[in-house]
Length: 251
Image (cartoon, rainbow, N blue to C red):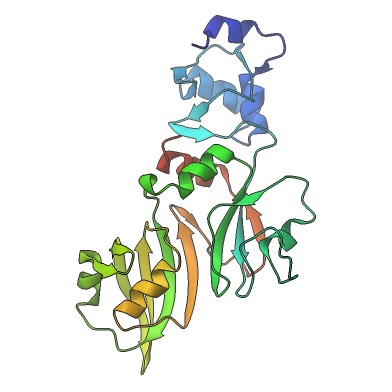
């Protein structure tokens, strides 16, 4: 059990307000106000004393109930993976892969799950092992959102069918939500949200119901969204986005 007194007494510890400022939560002055108001927790305990020192390598810090990543060397990015790029760090056949986009970064990052080569969109990259493990574990059921272009027209009851579930070769699958975004003669754009992680699950699901996918983009994982980020670009998740991922997987 961690001792509060020993943490306070650690000469090598860093003042909490400084840690919060370096993590981008607020200036030191505002961080001190947050502490005074009881809005900051360290390892599950509300901290109000200004002199509190913590070890950023081991402390779990929440502000207003949202976890803040305070380890300086931990980072999570979003890559908008282009079509044709493999979800791997290295390819022996020298095909384009995710690792190509990370060659200039000093951190040793790895991708959270995969997108097949023909699927583009949001791919998380991180060196936070605990977060990555839980995001990939099916028991946490983090929803993933996709836009799929399929042949139309779309039957009015297709959403109800997919929400009820269909049986694939490797077991049943159902979506969390399904909606028609747009349609032109012979073609439709649909949004599919599901927390499944099986290989090619969206493509297999839509093909099973008679609407094979011609293009597929993942637009969100949990509350983290791709937005208007251009293909091939990366960005660092902001504090709220990282906090939402921690919350989704119970960290």
